Amino acid sequence: MDMNSLFSEAQKLIPGGVNSPVRAFRSVGGTPRFIREAAGSKVIDAEGREYIDYVASWGPMILGHSHPGVVQAIREAAGRGTSYGAPTEIEIEMAKRIVAAFPAIEMVRMMSSGTEATMTAIRLARGYTGREMIIKFTGCYHGHADSLLVKAGSGVATLGIPGSPGIPRRLAELTISLPYNDSASVRDAVRSFGGDLACVIVEPVAGNMGVVPPRPGFLETLREITREKGILLIFDEVITGFRIAYGGWQNLASITPDLTCLGKIIGGGLPVGALGGRREIMEHLAPTGPVYQAGTLSGNPLAMAAGIATLDLLRGKSYSALDKMTETLCSGYRNLFARKGIPVTINRVGSMFTLFFTGEEVTDFASASRSDTERFGRFFQGMLAEGISLAPAQFEAGFTSFAHTDEDISRTLDACGKVLEKL
Ligand SMILES: *Cc1c(COP(=O)(O)O)cnc(C)c1O
Image (tube, rainbow, N blue to C red; front, side, top):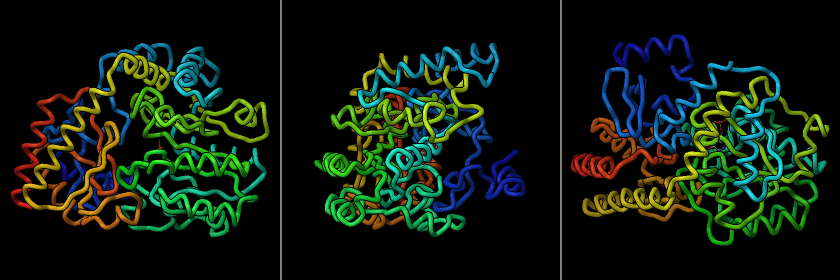
């Protein structure tokens, strides 16, 4: 079936034709590509067109698509049954790897999405501290649990909705949203509400307002202030976990959060999430403690097999080589835009990057929002027509993978050169 027929059929049966809003191309216009298959750095759409892929399923596919080692692990696991609702040895194997990779994690609970991990993290923080208020940062996205959908990033930012209907005002009032990278406003909020604050949750490198790195000292200050007041510090490393390094941003920054949320890469492309932290806090979760959390498919054998295969393959990889390739891409983009005199600010951290269509520095959601999203939309469509698949919104991260080659990068830059001629 052609793309337009697929999309109109899908819209009759699925709200907006998609099972997650940002896939719908609302901010860039046109018809979303329905994907038929993918391998390595390429995805192929339902009409047989091939694209070099920088979406990476929004982060998980760091080894590229259909990596033979991961596919093999999933096949073998599937042959032994797809779910038992009972503990398995493979869950211990997964927990061992996460605990070994993160000094701050002594115990970990596996789940089926990043949303479950962050939702459970704030419930655990509230249960552990006996306090109800939380601090998050505007433009950070932590999944779609009620307390966290306040001034959130990603699709929420793209669609321009500050909160969401359906979230009780009285619950939203317990969430304070502050500007990212603004330590002074955190100090002020803690001075006013300190005794009522259960946690501060942050993406240590923001990826959902586009990529925004933490300013030197920002995360260190969060650690210091929260420790002083008995507030838990939660690092949401659902994107950055095993993306920036084997482990997370916390390993590179040498900061010890109380709780860490993981997802995406640790499932190797299958649905997954995980919450880890200090034993003393984690044991507040049921059944050792009173804070309830559960999941029919948690620790699912296929997801564990795909995740473990991914982590074991990543151990042998050079993240610095991936960073270098990504920098080649980003500096190539910078040169092409400069030559055309089109303002752009490219933020890159490791293998995640965003081209913001603004000449100004981007350090928080307010500065990200100054991007020319209309121009981004035209750039996006131009690149798509040239066979390059970017995330279909300005406020998202792009990702390279270990399957991307130098040839992919130079083809991408060639395409960019052509697109800028007409922009
Ligand atoms: C993707 C993401 C989530 C949510 O994970 P899902 O698996 O989509 O529920 C949470 N936090 C961050 C930082 C993310 O990027």
